[in-house]
Length: 400
Image (cartoon, rainbow, N blue to C red; front, top):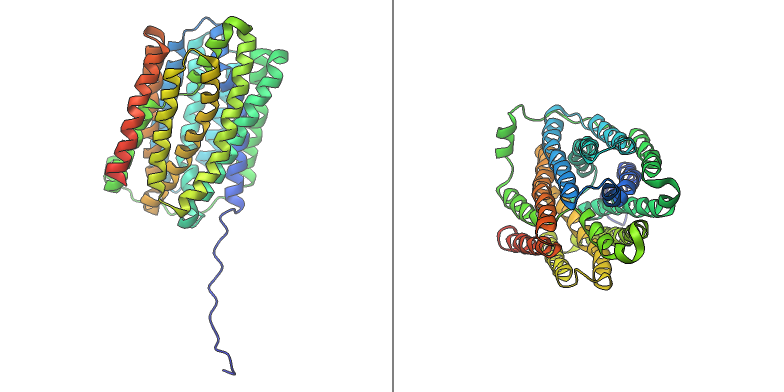
């Protein structure tokens, strides 16, 4: 050596915003724009059929429940077989096909069937996509990467309702459902041509229950906290319904639906804005504690609905602000799971996470719709408040 010592340079760390993460983000944006166009007008479309609030709760609950069980199977199958990208592509295709089905249904049970098929597609793609993402990013960047994907997803949830707001009066409900097929089809192309198919070594040949027993103990407590919170976190289409109900006497059905859709757009703007921000913050602080904060924020939001449930001046801002806690929970639940799960069981773990969420959605949306119809909207919000607090406290005392 002559003079200076030679110091070996560390290899550069892989970028977290790589082609695959961007591809998943763009796919999520397009797909969410597609199905949120339909979701935004779904309550008003059902009302035009004469369906009660209980029907909306049943549609959302059953669809989410079927989606969740499919996620559990898809995650386990992808770990066992090593097959990931084809499952994701088929899942996006089924969701897009269900949007076209909405345009031709004549009764709410038929709509339930179409929604269920679409949400089975969501179940096939969700945990497998998350496992693929976790495989191509470093652990210290989980928050940012999942935050980016969620932000893109929610950007689609902003674009979709806004398109619905622009075209609803001209195209009508059924015409809008046909329009929603366009971004859904582009999402399929995005997953096929942007996301690379990586070789995954097939995992253990143990049966399903045997692999479930291998999930870490702390992760199982984590799933319990998520399930309790999910029991109170009913589908936000019921919040759209509440805003519509309050506005209908003065604005009529179409006018009330249009304002509710616009409010849902701003709700999703805050969701998108908080997703990446809290994911970034989670990479620098404690993700579990930050997630518990999101659960308590949800409880505070439900309290606001309980106290101001009959006044649009109170519930519309709360409806918009509720996008913040959704952004926190959606990003950090996945980022924490990625930290807790070994790589060889990651697909099943993400499937179990989705199932815990979906079972909560199944019971919460169905029960909230029932309480809403039989008792009052205040009873539904009280139910949500109690379980949101339970989920937050369990997250603090048993997981953190």
